[in-house]
Each structure stands twice: as C-alpha cells, then as structure tokens.
Image 1 (cartoon, rainbow, N blue to C red):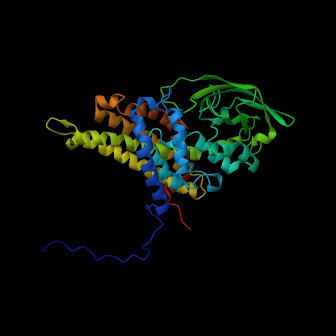
Image 2 (image 1 turned 30 degrees about the vertical axis):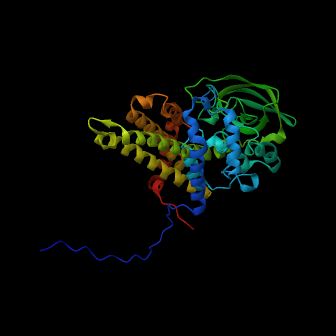
Image 3 (image 1 turned 90 degrees about the vertical axis):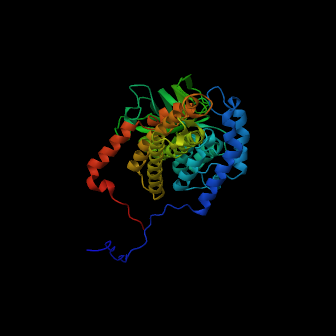
Length: 420
C-alpha cells in the first residue's frame, strides 16, 4: 500500500438540522452588553473603595439607591418580572445569560433588583398569588419600595433541607391563623417588610404545610437576633425569628391549605438556579482578576501565565465554570419548557457551587499574598462562596435527589428531551 489512506467519502446526512442552538438572540445579547457596560461604568469601580461597603460588607444603602434608579432608567430593572409589572420579561434562558453577567460584580445583582431572596420571592408570587395578593405583596417588591424574606428553615429538630420536619404551627381560628414557633437563618429578614411564611397546619405527611403572607408591622412576632456568620452578608442578614401569636387573615394564605410543600418546591427550584447564574459570574470574575495578575507578574525569569503549573490551575477552573454554565443553561431551558427540571437544577447547583469555590481558591493561589489581602475582592468572594454548598439545599441533599432519580429512571436518566 502506498501513500496515505484516503478518507471515506462524506456521507450525506438526511437530517442535517437539530434544535440544539447555543447562540443568543440579538435581544438577549443586547441586554448582556448593556449590563456589562453599566457595571463597568457605575458599579465595578465602587468595589475598590472601602467606603462603598456598609457594616456588614455589602454595598452601602446610600450608594445603592441612586444606582438602582440608574438601572431602572436604563431599562435593566427586574429582568425576571413581566414588562406589565415593571420588569423586562426575560425567559429563564435569558435570565441565565444576564444574571451571569451582573454576577461579575459583588454588588451587581442587588443594583438590578435581581438579588436573593427578593428575586425568588417575586417569581413565586407572580406564579401562584392571586391578583389581589400580587397588588398588595408583590408589586412593592418589584418596584423596589420594600424588601422581602422567605421564612422556612428552623432550629433543630425543625425543618432544614427537609421541610417535613416543620415545627412552627399555624392554628386556624375562624377566618384567621395564629402562628407559634421559631425560624432561623432567614435571609434578609432584618430589612424585609413582606414575608412569606411556611408553617405546619396539620400532621398530614404530604399536605401538612401551608404558606402565608405577613407584614413586618404586624404584632405577634419578632427578630431574636441577626445571626453572626462568616460574611459577607445579604442586606438584612440571616435572622432568627420567633412567633408568639402572630395572627394572619385567611385572605393572606398563599395557595390552598396544605399546599405549603408545593409552594416551597415552586419557590426553591428556580431560586436555586438563579443562584447558579449569579455564582457563575462571580467565578468568571475571580479568574479575570487572576488573569490580569499572571499576565504581568514574573517569577523565575518568566511570566506566571507561561508556567505549566499555573496553566493547569487556570484550565481546570475554566473548564469547571463552563460545565456549570452548560448545566445551568440546560436547566433554564427545561424550566422554559414548563418542566420541573428537578434533577437538572440539582446537577447545576452541585457543579456551580463547587466551581465557584474552585475558581476563587485558584485565583487566590495565583495572586499569592495579594489575593489573600483585601486589595482585591477575592477574599470577600471566598468567604461568600463557602455558603454556596449549603444554601437552598446542601450538596449532599442534591446528590441524593440525583441518586433517587437514577435508581428510578435507570438508563432514561440520560435521555435527550424531544422537541416539538
């Protein structure tokens, strides 16, 4: 045989096209670019000034209010809400792109009214609240006039990742519900005006929980303490609450009696994914900071970027972020199709929370002492990232979800969804 073997002729493919398309629409790409430009001009420069931070290491309220007005005027406000309600009406896929971009700044999401816990609460109320409830409880949050909180988790032996352990009880008395119990690690409760509360209303294992709406100014409840954490904190911190006779009119019940577990599932699934979207932006920003450093810093006669060991670290972190992006986008696509996307969200939550920690840890290592200092936001990000494997379900709980799905579905666990 002489010469190289000739490749076989190209086989004509009868079904050339598929529905897989990773391109962005001009509309979504436009939003992304505008968010990036807004951050570069108005937000990122603030991170280098210690005066920009409040006592809990978040953006100072005096700076936040004018930035939010600028974001609203720029048409970048509440991307997750319908336009009729004052938002931008983005799909979950569109949100994935834009939340990732705004997540590059540690102050970004709150500026656009897309930060936790408000964004998850807004999406829940838009989906399940009555029109009267939306006017009373949702619209002020969308408008940025009040903040909100979701009160579910409790001290042991109460509910954590497992809502079935709920101890806080709501007893019906005529047309009102009277609440007794305790909640803790309630994000944003220190400044929230509107609360969504999940409490036990019966001992039924599936329909024993009910969700309610209440206002900060109602008597019968209080904040025991703002729980100290590693920080940095969300605005309003993570609080412990007591309920010693809070009365809630039945008209402020969310969905039907016994639908509390359903409410938590509707609330937490998309909210877990929006966490992932924001965390991806933070992970990318960490590598950006490290990249700027290793391109300029020399060691042993060469730039750090040219050291093989440095390249391994950067390559691994970059790949972990990209895997997280793909899982997040697939889960967002499934949500847009009307699916629960439970296993897709769990996979994204595990991968992105770990990729976030890996990217920031790598960036600190590459920046050396500078990365460990407060001269960059990396140490802020590092402390923030540690909670990612805990909030909205610990990684181990999500791995259990995946294991149960695989045991039930077998080979169908990896089935490609059909279009059309």
